[in-house]
Length: 277
Ligand SMILES: C[S@@+](CC[C@H](N)C(=O)[O-])C[C@H]1O[C@@H](n2cnc3c(N)ncnc32)[C@H](O)[C@@H]1O
Image (cartoon, rainbow, N blue to C red; front, side, top):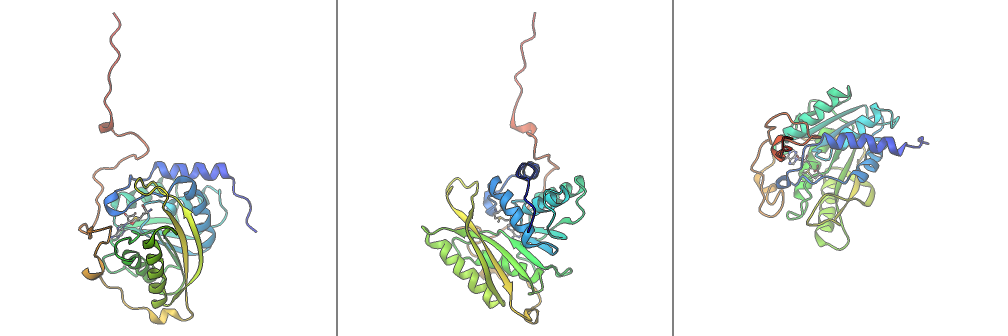
């Protein structure tokens, strides 16, 4: 039985992380999870990955940072032993690294990586987490590529947590859910749990669209299925980030080091008080 989490401390920890998070680029389907859901999700992820090495395949939401920070601040007394974030956005990678450095979180790190490239299988992780582009216009193929990278990160052996759209009123999330479950099965994974309609997002054109936690686990001896990782063929990239939005960017580069929690000089001008006679 886990001890009760101090909600105030948990919310304040996530607030620190949100202050440090780069703003989302809608062009690449970066849409951030709402803060209340991040608090609950972080506890769920820490519990699920307790004592394990966890790879994040993309993480603009910064759940990785919340999980690591809550552990180091002793808001949670459980969580993964190592967290590595793989993301093609250098702003995200540097924000994770700077936060880990500032807060002296030794088990948190990030590296620049584009899912279109073969996965660098130098370390074997025990579990993976991904909240990928949701594949609304390609029947989940974008999700499947992120899931494949997660499966490669764990050497086809372990657990995955996939965060994707879940809505009973729309047809496409059901198609995507079926496609991702079928793809996972082809790779030797079965659906071990599903927590439905959990998270809300800062998504102005679909504010009610929710996502679920879809858990997959490997079948026995599944590492025998492992194949060398290879670059994604163009045929898999159609409508990757939405209708007619194929990938055209290798990396998003950080222009200058920003303090995301503070207003930037170019956001405002100062109209000075009249000098008193
Ligand atoms: C696509 S967004 C999905 C929405 C999610 N709520 C978020 O904002 O993090 C997830 C993450 O994937 C990253 N990403 C997008 N395309 C990628 C690619 N080709 N390779 C690696 N990471 C990518 C984004 O930078 C972002 O951090």
